[in-house]
Image 1 (spheres, rainbow, N blue to C red):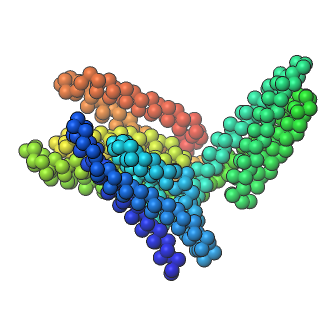
Image 2 (cartoon, rainbow, N blue to C red):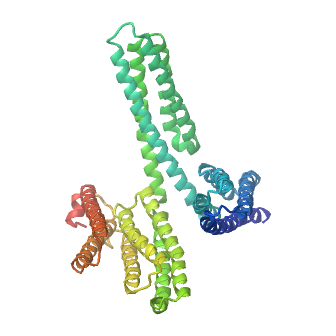
Image 3 (cartoon, one colour):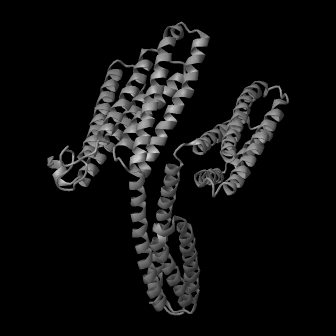
Length: 486
């Protein structure tokens, strides 16, 4: 019980750090405005000292948080392994994102009276703190850990791909040196490059060991590649390019094997998390719809007062932009999860199109717009999100021989394919509707030439994406699925 309370206390430290940052941001913005007013008469900006003090306090809390996460993870490692893993993941995230360092940079900006830059830096830090808080307080830490593993595995595979290309270049250069004589200097340079490749292989092997037995074959291949590279180094150092090239060929073979095994492990992890991520994205879509509806209802209530240019109503509309930005953030997270797990080809692009509309609504709210056009745009976002959610619900229906939905050829779930097609159809309909709207605006001369070209370019990009995805979906689909055989 005590340990649980300690983990919760860690979450509270983040909440406190966030509140400190919020106060610091508000003060920084106020002083920035005052600084602009008094820049001409050269007055001293005294409040910046107080803001810097608040910023330094937030940094101290962040430092305490990192230390506490490390200590608690060791303390509860045996009794509460999930919470210990959560804390270590949080610590790693905080350090990878350099939150503490960025807080120090913000403090330095305040010291140098770069208030606008400090305010922007603080806002970015706040986003990172919110993500960290969400991670530490999430109910499903198992999913978060697997997603983090998947991200690292993808990074490892990309590093491995680069290493393979470097080793292939090494082989090409070594074979070239076999045709020359008196080239000791060139061979020495190749030896140095080979040593770098060997070190990269060793580092990659060490990184992949954390996956345990699942990565055993990958680590074995990387170890073999490292040994072959070491052998090539010795031969190059002895001015023997021919035997060195033989070692390099073996290293390339081992790296290729490691590459294939890494892809298999990556696919396995994706399958493990697919259903959980799919459900998580569906939950997020439901939340986004509910939040967008609330924003629309408030905008509708404020519409008449905004038309009368009442200051309080205009300020209330501008505050709605903060809520819209939260929806945009949730949408971005859903897109990232879709791209990471690859459970849908169409959904991330479709969500990207909806996010563009959200950003336009956000800009309008910041300008205090609350007219019929704004309310219609908000309603359209709700409808678009609902259409995508309905398609995802269809895709989640299980397939079986008796109940239908199972392909006769590949035995896969045709419901998923139908859901992808529905989302594609929605995307095409959306582009068509927006094209008609643009045509009307051009005819009525309600749009500037610059905005017209921007909108045309955006619609062209979306149409190309639809064409590309349609082709990819067709090539990935078996003939029986296309024929509708069950």
